[in-house]
Length: 22
Image 1 (cartoon, rainbow, N blue to C red):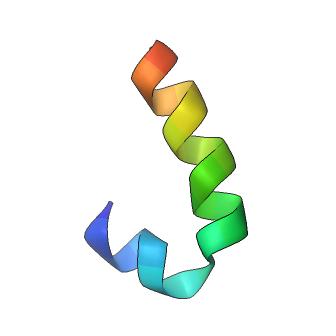
Image 2 (cartoon, rainbow, N blue to C red):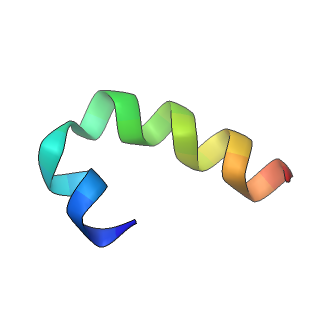
């Protein structure tokens, strides 16, 4: 999760929303 944020904030934001929902 931490490294993903550094890769792309935009993409991570979308992923975070799905992850949180999961």
